[in-house]
Amino acid sequence: MNFKKVEIIFILAFLILDIFLINIFMNKYVGTSNQAIENQTLDIVTEFKANNIQYDEISDEVLRIPFIRTLNTTLSEEDVLAVTEDTQSVEVNGNQILGQINTPIQLEGVTAETPSGELSDSALSSLNQFINSEVYQGSQYRFISYDKSAGKVTYMQETASGAVVADGSGEIIFQVNDDYAVYAYDQTITGETAYQGEERTVISEQQALENAFLNNSIPDESIILRSFLAYRETLALDEITLYHPVWTLLILTNEGTTQRVFVDGINGAIMTQ
Image 1 (cartoon, one colour):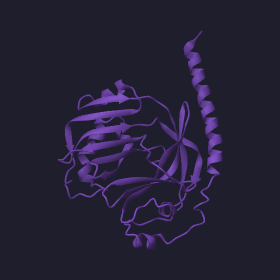
Image 2 (image 1 turned 90 degrees about the horizontal axis):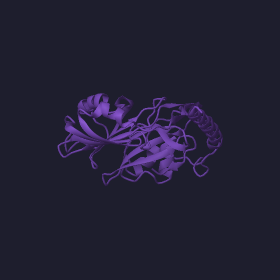
Image 3 (image 1 turned 135 degrees about the vertical axis):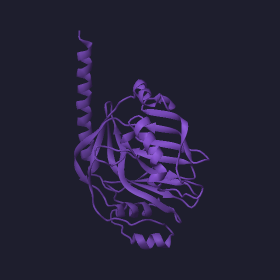
Image 4 (image 1 turned 120 degrees about the vertical axis):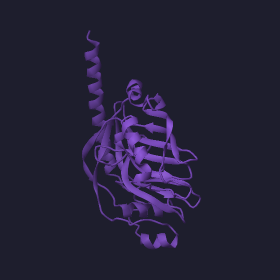
């Protein structure tokens, strides 16, 4: 018996079954709505001012974006070491890489006065060079935010649609020391991404913020550091994982901590991290 051929047949069978189950799930999922908030409206600008919530401009543009799927894979330690062994020590576990950097990478110009949120191109220049050349598949990731209180810099993995994975399954968290240099990281990586079905209309950024505010997910006296359309895992099967669009809000509280709030891009529901 040709066991390799049998193995391939089983893998293909599971893939076909997974795609079939995903299509059933999507037909049910996309038809749902959040009845508790769909009929509520408010002047979000006035409400934010009244509650001392800081924010940038808010868009009311309605966008279209597809669901995506990934093939479930396990990292090869040999492949990872081929990229990382000269500049760091790493531990590979499933789809996670823990790295200790031999020579910490300075964040130029970052000091105790640098607030959470964005970092300049010059501050990230050396780190970006390191990511592109010394981090496994590092070119797939892009900068998202700096967390001053936690001493962390977050990058997220881009997908086939250009939007990032924001639920932690495709992310690099860099640790920053007291000298504002990156010395370690925790990386997760998804399998290769592809569109699942056609593009879907999603709620606007304005609607996402309104829903989050109505559900008490934006604290008073906070700062909305960023709000962006991304992905979050919605269904995991044997061979394939499905991700759906979510608005991701990064919120700096008046206590100095950064919270991540997800608003479902299809039905507007608020989801816990």
